[in-house]
Length: 202
Image (cartoon, rainbow, N blue to C red):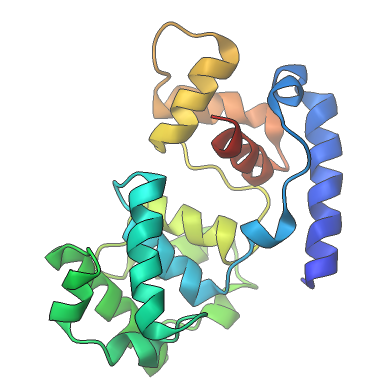
């Protein structure tokens, strides 16, 4: 999808969601900036690995230090040229260093063909990604959303989304992942775009 087509798809999705969910529409602060929500797939995978169990601010800080070493967009070759100590100095844990290196190696060696994945079904993409060390469903969801342009993906276990739904609906308790996934049904076929709106709003 070209940048222009992606921006047009966002505008269509926003109009649909505004009509489908007045509560969400009332919370939205203007159109989403299209350029912020599309990353090169390998960059999206790295960013998702970095962001596991971290705040948005902490993840952005670590990603910035890593990109200062690799250049942007990062390539598998650039990542693999950095030794483990330098990756740790960026703020990555030992486990995340191993995951980042494994992902870069898989892409470089062709075991993970990210461009080819873009045309596959969501379940197949998730299976390919979660076969990598340190990649679980949440990380796969982030790659689908930010790297592969899928507009109907939802990450029900994401704490930020659960807190946003709690605030949006005035709930006393934090909704469970299952309850969050059920709530997201009204946002089909644009659950990704609803998630982006919720993350920005919260």
